[in-house]
Each structure stands twice: as structure tokens, then as C-alpha cells.
Length: 319
Image (cartoon, rainbow, N blue to C red; front, side):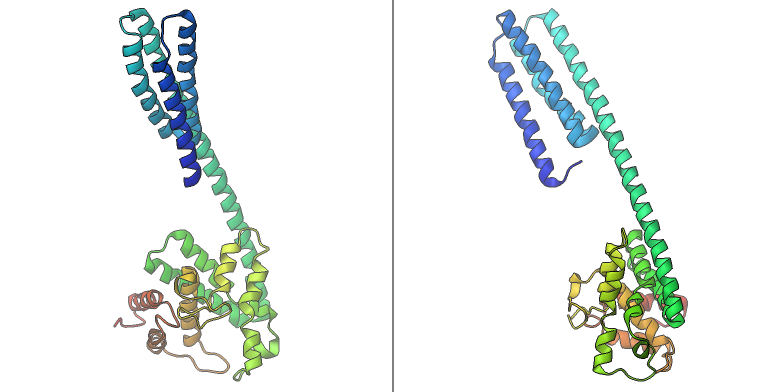
């Protein structure tokens, strides 16, 4: 129900309350009517412990608190109120009340938690739907600007999903990689046509202009509700494990795994595609080139996963 720090504080409060009530029960005598009233009040205060446990820790917390209360209450009845069967009957009935309250409050807390999870899931689904719609719009913008870039992005997305699945990543991470791959080059919208579509080699100044596209893409994505994770992946998809990438020079695990996957898929797709300034490379040669940079320029596990994917598809013989 709460994060670790909050849970510890709540648990400490429950233990302090349980201890205080239990000590008071045993410390106060039972010789007068007034003291008997105090005992009744103290017995009722145990209910606060049970209810608070239900609120803070759900059904399990409520039931465990009832066990603790029972463990303290039965000895109290046997020691302080021994040889008083009529009073004992009332007190044992109070134990039933504790358990009924614990089960009821715990069940209500559990149902509330389920409803909250459903609400959060609904919100996440709505966010994801908005992100997908936005990405579809950006993909259309890429098509209008450069049909090649859109086709390339779709191929990168397919490869990223295959690599993610091969690595056994959770479904949500694979989906993040797919969505990021679809629009990883959307920042090229901010690059001049004469640079983006130049058939020859780029000058240093032109290369620097192209290398701005991850930051441009991240700036485009961040205002979209629910797209922050995708923006982080797109921003980092040109980073290298050895820190030689751009735009931030991130290293190793500092680069999101989804970004590392997209980078491997992006470079492989670029190598095997024909471009105005180069011929297409065959799959074996592309994988060999990636393998040479695995661990430094490219994620090692990502490259190995891609090789397995290509081997399964029959496009490459695993080595």
C-alpha cells in the first residue's frame, strides 16, 4: 500500500499502539467498576490497530494484526480476569469482533486497492493510446518529409521487437522499444533538406547538424502526455557503451536497454539498406561489422540477440 519508508513508519506506529494498549491492560487492575470501564475502552482501542493495519497493509495486515491482538488479549483474559466465566464470555466474544472487523476492513482495503490498480491501468492505457496516435501522426510527418526514413523506421521497429523478445525483456519494455524505433529519426524533421538528402559524404558542420536530431526528437516527444520514457529512449539511441556516442556521451548501463536495442537495430538496418551514397551490405557482413564493435560501440547482448534472430530466420548462420 505504501513505499518502504512509509511502511516502516506505519509498522512502528502499529507496534507502539499494540504495546501501549497491552501494557495498560496488564498494568491496570480489575478491582473496581471504573477500572473495568477502562479495560473496555482499551479493548476497543485494539480495533484501531486492526483497522489501521487494514488501511496501511491491506487484508494481510489486518489479519496479522488480529493475530497479534489475539496473542495479547487471551493471556490478559486468563491472567487478569481468571475465574470469572461470565466476564470471560464477553471478552472472548470481543475476539470474534476483532476478527470480523479485520476481515471486513481488510477486504474493503483490498477492493479499494484493486479499483485503484484498475484506474491506473485505465489511465496508462489512455496514455499509451494517446502516444500511439501521436506517433502515428509523427510517422505520417516522416512520410511527407522523407519516405525512406519512414520505411527505415518501420524496419528498425520490427528488428527492435525481435531483439527485445530474444533477450526476454518484459512486454512493456519491448513495446517501448518498438514505439521509440518507429519515431527514432523524427528529429530529422529539424534537419535541412540539403543536409538530410545529400547524396555524398557530410562535412563536419553538416554531421553536427544531423547529430542534433535525437535532441530535436526528444523535444518533440516530451510535451506528449505519457511519452517521457519514449523520449528518453530516442534521445539515447546514438549513445555507445564506451561513452563515445552522442548527444550526452552516456556509458554502459546508463543507457536505457531499449535505446541500446534500437541502436543495434538501427545500425543493422542502415547497413543492409541501399542509400544514395552507398550500396546495401549483405546480412553476414553487417553482423560481422556489428560484432567488431560489440561491447564498445554496440550493446554486446543486443548484437548477440540479433545474430540469433537472423540465424532463426535463415538469413545468417550463427557463429
